[in-house]
Image (tube, rainbow, N blue to C red):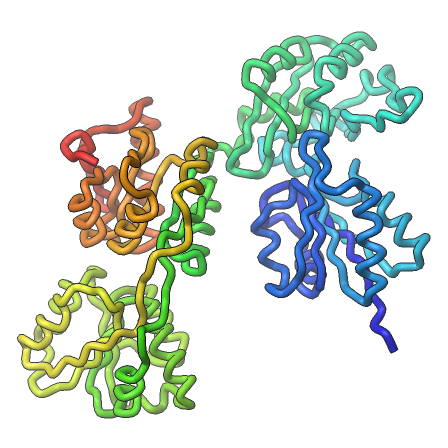
Length: 531
């Protein structure tokens, strides 16, 4: 019997990827085909299965990638083939979208479907701008209005006289008709002094709010070059924004932070940045590759119980080590009585995830501190295994050997240049998406410079941040200036350093150029170093 397909029409929310519903994620995660719109955040698509086919059906500024008739046909055709289809629509599918029309087509064709409501931008965007749409002291009614009616309609379906008497009004897709909306409201008796706000790209780090009154909002929107997508809010509740503006007050709001580490390892960093209002930009300059051959690793793993210590200097080394152990049909029990040293808390957490304890974590997360942490431990005649990157400094093996240890160094992985291109980064720069470029290791610097090639110069307004002194030394050697470097060589430490840097900039009301220090960060004088 042929499998019967089904279509889930899912509201993907207004932009913040965290605002899709749990039900929406569940339906998306089992889809064979994902058909998504322009305003659907790319991060939401990672909930789909890797093998799911993705079809972009967006519309931007009236330019349709796929006509609505083609979208309708696709939904019916894919389901008829027995596939599960996730139709992702921005906001809520039944609020001024065409979800109702698509559901009608599916019903007429006898295709099973389900509607998964979403968080509509009409509600979420004002909330992220600090505007409560109802309030006991200011508004007891709320009206949602389309700012872009079906052009085929003979006459308007909007009762402007009634709207002018309502409490809070929210117009969606109304930026292009903003002047006409304001004219109609004032012409029907709404005071020109009524508070109003236009919010563009709401719930995202690109959010921009322009506040005024019906009398001047058209001019202010034009001066601030507000264009779709945007929401217009009219009513006394707009005045509460001065007290309730929480999202745009986040410490890194609107800052574009480029992460150069491998994409699969950038999620934690990106999440922390997003929580603080920043715009994470993934531009991995390196990727992690296996060693050229496994013979030495396999030989060491066969003798693993003979080692007294195993020293892990990175999370990549931990993953490679235990992945290879599993491929050889072994597990952590083969380690015997070997003690474990991890260079930092993130690496230690990963080791513990394999059910093992960590015996030694240095106070500072650099190679020199690993050596220092072993002082006072008798290493004479002890066998130490060091699985690490192919290209790494010899501080640890030389330091431990000097204490009498027999150190065996293994290449557990290689860092190689990614497939990113110079043109991709230059496009990000042109779009004004970059405020900070973060390097997490010397290899990210080396590969970034290889990708960009000769003749490239980073704009002065783009700051450079480095995690740890080794990365900073590599940046200086490459002729790059360093604007931000934290003392705690971790991802959370870097986020704190970015917060501190921009807090100081706000206090001074201009970009900071003087060296400043606090327990969490060090800001170096950029004028003393050349790029």
